[in-house]
Image (cartoon, rainbow, N blue to C red):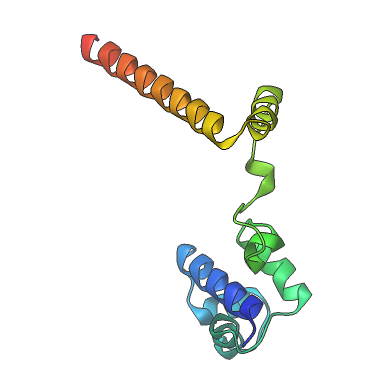
Length: 125
């Protein structure tokens, strides 16, 4: 078995269960004759056609790259990066490992401080 068939099989199984579908129900939604195709996809015995991958990506609201295990980003349209996020990320890449750790520690400290302040406000209200 090839790694990509195993990866897509695992993703199909996870998504099918998340959507609370049986193999037979998924097969019907995809216009397949029986659950055996879905079972074979999930086992990695066979790989779905490109048309079936496209149908699954629409059904499960995920990218084909996510379905195939190429990416862990389920739906790239849901990522919202603003200019500050992009500038910060590219700036961090320019730092050496030691300074990257310092920057990470500072951010974690600020987030903890913010959370503490929010908890205090909730307690006072």
